[in-house]
Length: 363
Image: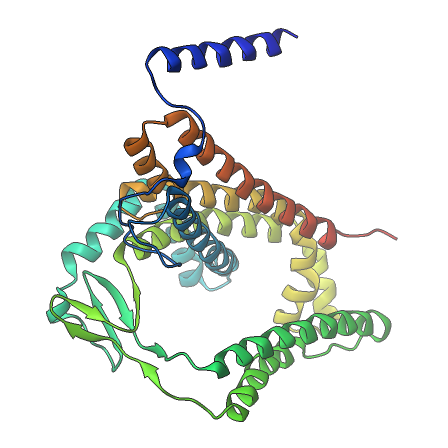
């Protein structure tokens, strides 16, 4: 009751202060014209669009860097964590240096470093680095050629989706077969072939389109192709390198939590090192790895809000611009809190679901 009373007092007092200062409240401003440009967008956007569209652009940019960052972080962190336990002295020491250095430098400083690197050390578009045809690297970002749109690409995407479904059921069958007979099915190689062959066959049957949308220098910048901005690259590099250092330690701790006797037993039955890691060590280590890994993935998503420091138009940056133009700070801050809460809860729910599926079931 006391908490509700305090909450009511704060809410009513805030409304009274806003009314006394003639500050508008509510979310009616979302339908008004935004009147500001956004440098990077996954959807069509102009200054004539509403604040709702502008905030959606910021949200999509946040999701883009978070999803790509999570995937790369898990892969890189797992690789470095395994390298940290390597019997090769040089590999183990390099992994240890990577972890110690990147963990001890604040992520914001790393963002500033990569941002300054792209703008200070890379040439202008007219003198852009051109390692091979169709790719340019300058202080305006990375620009490279992409396939020109063709209806065949939609069918290739559908074929890739079908390949994913086939791999899902194939994995279930292979797991059941291995449990019953002990025979190992080459799932990785088969999955890789399916991912490559099915879209390739679709591409060939649809006419094998090869037209490319290549970048060309026009004025002071490039036109055409796909442009990855320096802000996005700096943000992605900073988040991935910083978070992967912590993920590497989590992976190392998870692997070391598995008894040495498990490895020795696997070696005694003739399993190869790769099979020991994939079939014996990692399945048992996941129960230790997944809970702290979830926390690090959440940290990566929340740290993406630091994008405002280097000018990447994520949700926080767009919301701050909206607040400055409308003066409705309470609504803007509330939307920022709600968005990051939903993203964090969604990530947590997925990781908890995966943790429940991968946990050891005792007989």
